Amino acid sequence: MLLSYLNTHSVQHPATRRYNFFTPDAKTVNFQYDFPVFLIYTPNCMPSAFENSLCRILFAAILACLLAVQVVGADEKTQKQKQLKALQGKIEKLKKTIHVKQDSKSRYTTQLRKIEGHIGKVSQKIRVTESKIKQQKSELKKLRSAREQHQKQLLRENDILGEQVYTAFTLGKQEKIKLLFSQQNADQMQRNLIYYQYFSNARVNLINQVEENISRILATESRISLASQALEKNFQELKNQKQLLKKDSSKRKTIISSLDNQLKKQGGHLSKLKDEAKELQNLLDSIVEILIETPEPKLTRKAFAGLRGKLAWPVKGKVRRLFGYQKQVSDLRWQGVIIEAPGGRHVKAVSHGRVAFADWLRGLGNLIIIDHGNSYLSLYGHNESLYKSAGEWVEPGDIISSIGNSGGQGKPGLYFEIRKKGKPQNPTKWCKSKNQFASG
Image (cartoon, rainbow, N blue to C red; front, side, top):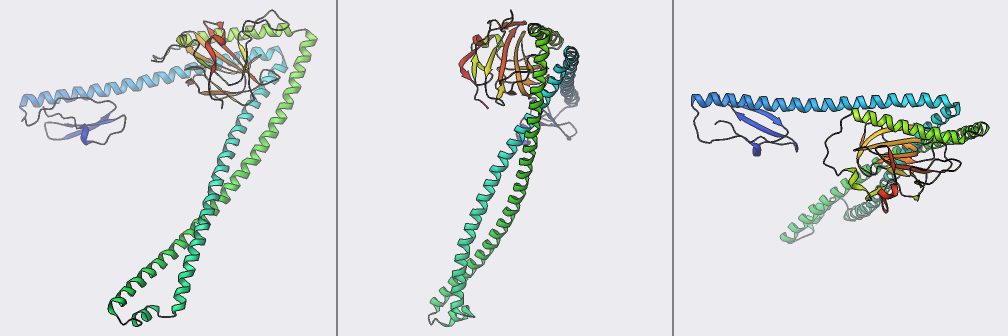
């Protein structure tokens, strides 16, 4: 047959191979595909009329199959995008419903949700700005070090050049002619001419190096100036952001105080706790219903159920083993644990999964819920900032949020739960004290 696979004679992308098909009329057809196709090649064989026809049919069939697979792949990608968009739409609708219900409870709850959401965004901007400042400081330090090296090199070159200029000056004008006529031996004269040319070339090269170093110093000075201006701009931006954060934090304290006074007057602390527990359960039930309608992808990773006792804690800190203990002034029990940690510290996903919810919820503040498949969920509450959105996939150790005190808490910390089919599981049975991610 006149079909050949010239894999070794074509430039390839890591995930792409190029195939050259020689048709019976001696024309070459080139196309690319993302996996290898092995074809039969019979060298030194003249085709018959039958073989020519068979070759055309085979070529058309192979090309049709490859194109069909490409279309299927594109359809699958489009389908996944549609599913993700549908999931995000349902979660967004659920969030709006929750906000309406919560806002109807108290105007202070609405104010708290908005101010804590704003604090989270400002805090995230502060961290981004601080990261920029750190990088710019490092770059500025490198530039100043480079300038210092260029200046030292320029001083050395100036000294050498000065010595050469002084030597030339002592010889006076027409130094080359003086070297020629000061020697009676022809061989010595020839050697002197070679030496003179060598030193002359070295002097020219040195002058060029001096000029290059001066240019480098000037260019480095310009970059240092620009970097310093950018650094100063970010310092000012950071100052403004911190002032805004301080103002928002003050507002938050006032709102929490007003909310507490309202509860005291109404004697509603117990009622509040029960309402918050009910709202969380309703949220989880709604999420489960939404996830059932969204097909799970087939993955080769180990099932979450097999990770019991092997998970790392989501953040490095002091774990308050509250699970199962009764809450104060109520008959409700803790369904998770509190991990005490400094504000702003990174919170990480304990396992692979899909973010099912990322928003503010009364009692838990800025909350992230991750679906790990097979009816397993992990919950992360009281965050300062949320870094993931509903529908996003995460891997173990991925940063999903930062430690905070949202939800009206007094101290920073993370509320952490694990649930199976909606039923709370003891996190200390799933996570080991010595098994922790490096804190970020």
